[in-house]
Structures are given as structure tokens and as C-alpha cells.
Image 1 (cartoon, rainbow, N blue to C red):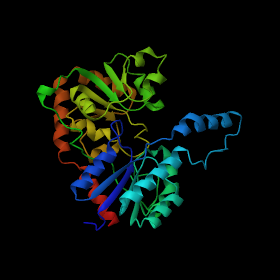
Image 2: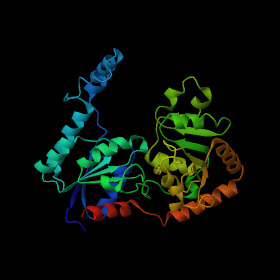
Image 3: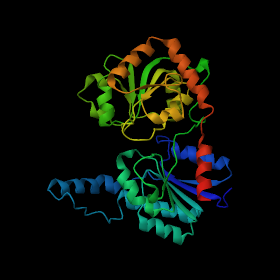
Image 4: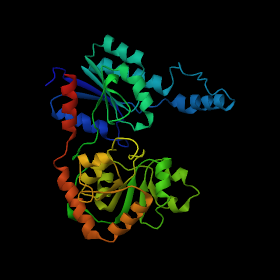
Length: 347
């Protein structure tokens, strides 16, 4: 085990946040490490109330490449760096693990490493592949850098593969039959984007419930989707119960997995709840499940509609596949496995 005992994780933390940071922290604690959290989702009120609108005004008059407030100490970025420094000064970590998430400047990270004698500053790209150019530009600012995607970087970049997909059976778990009502048909949980909108628009007529940011606002004049939106977000125990109660948990990646590598975290989260997973097809799924036996996939709208119709009308087949997936899940990597792999590489 590494001699570096104190690890500070920077990511989103809170009741309405992606629980990846919490999952990693819990795994590291179970391995004997002292772990502190930094919530990189903190925002500056002045930035939200004044600077954001001032920047829009500047761009609106044609000065699109001008950022007059870039060096301001009251931007989100500046506030995050200031608060992270306070946390580092108080906790004095041996390892700073930045899940990306929000990033920090190369100058800031170098200063923190030297000033507070941090042994390893580690980055882990856990965002989608859309922003790979940003990942490439910042990877050199860290002592070690990991990515959840296989593509978009070379061996010479120093970036290493480390999947984020893993089992967290504390947050996501199968409930007892007496706790499950089975009252939901098809559920989709995820923030709005254009790709997801395009797919959802083709599911008219199915008993669909949508949870996620921006769906209501983006569909004010689309009554078919608007009436399916149940909330801006759902997390923790409520999300676990929702997956347990649904017939089909639909997953739509924010990127096209047939074109770009990587799996989102819901692939295992859904199956861990004993739910039937219907997700967009990716060749990487074969590393975890047997398609058609443990989970189901779709490659286009036609196949998605066909499979939704079939499995909504064939409860026995749906339940059999869900149980197979849950059984297979018991042999898959946990977050303790992921964190052990990370520590072994930086030790």
C-alpha cells in the first residue's frame, strides 16, 4: 500500500450531485486512507449575477474573443481555486485527486504542489469525449493523468486508461420485493442535450417518465415530452427506488457510443438495482455483460421502439434478463478495485 495516507478529492459533492466522488472516497476510506472532499461545484454569486451577463453583453456587441473578467478574483474559477487552496492548507494531503469535473490552472496546481509538499497531483478525466481537446491541453499539468475513454490520446501524451464504470452497492442496490411497487413503465434519468432530445421525441406513445435538468425548460412548447418530465433531478435513495420500481430503465449516452468510446455510469447503476437495462449499443458493453442475456441494447430508433414494445409486453423475459444482469454484476469491478488500480499506478 502507498505510504501516502491522506487523499483530497476534488469533484461534485452534495445531495444533488453525481455520486462518483462519494463512491471513490468511500472506497479509499475502506482501504485505510484518510480522505477529505472538496466540492468543485461551488459557484460565485457575483459571477452569476453580474459577470456572466456582462460577458454576454460584450459578446453581443461583436467582441466574441474578449474576456474582460478573466483575471477577476470573483469568477467561478477563481473562487474554486481560492477555496481549494484553503482546503489543501487545512488538510495537507499527500495526494490531490482531481476528478474532471472542474479543472484548475497549471500555475495553480504547480504552486499548490510546491507550497504544500503534495507528493502526487493526479487528474482523472471522467467527462464525455466531446471535450477531449481540453483534456489533452491540461493533462501535462498533473503528475499522472487518467481517462475513462480509450480513444482521443496517444501513449506519448502520458494519459492512461482508467474506467469509471464500477459497482457501488451502497447507493445502488436491489430492494426487497415487499419494498417494490413496479409502478413505473419506462424511466429515463439524465440531463437534457440535443442527442437525447432527438431520441426521446421518437418515443411518443410509450409510458415514459423523464428526470433531469433542462428537460422542462427545453420542452415548454412540446406537450408530449413536457408531460413526461417528472423532475429536474433525482438522486440517492429516491433514484435507487425509481430504478427498482420501473419495468425498463432506458439509458441514452450524452455522446454517440457507436462513434466514440466510453460508457456512462448508469450502465452499472441501473443493473445494480436489479432493473432491466436498455441502453444504446457500445462494443465496450461486452466487457461487462452479454447483450440479449444480461442487458439489452439498441442501435437506432426503430430497434429502440421495437424493443420497448416487446419488453413492455413480455414481463417474464424482462425480469429474466434483469436477474441475469444482476447476477453478472456481482463479479464486476467495484470502486475499491478502481481506486486500488489508481493507487498502485501512482505509488
